[in-house]
Image (cartoon, rainbow, N blue to C red; front, top):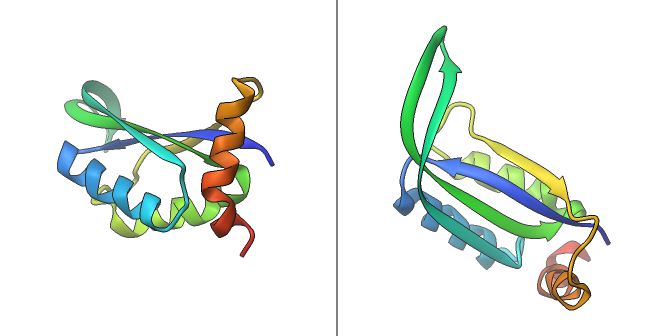
Length: 109
């Protein structure tokens, strides 16, 4: 099973916590780290925006990315939320195995 790190952004901590908890309750992720206050600059509707957001990093498996994305999209207030995944090609083997164990019930359904 391939482990991935999913990077997401949210308008504030309350939303990040609510969605992170939903992902955990559904066993779509093994862990969510919520990072306080990030400065985001981006193009939106033809103008450069500069906002404060909250970022989250979720650890899961590649087989659960689509259900994770669907869950986040269903709960997220943004029209086009940031939900991107990066493969974890290397890592501490016991930690990677822990990700598999924590998401196994869901990924085998």
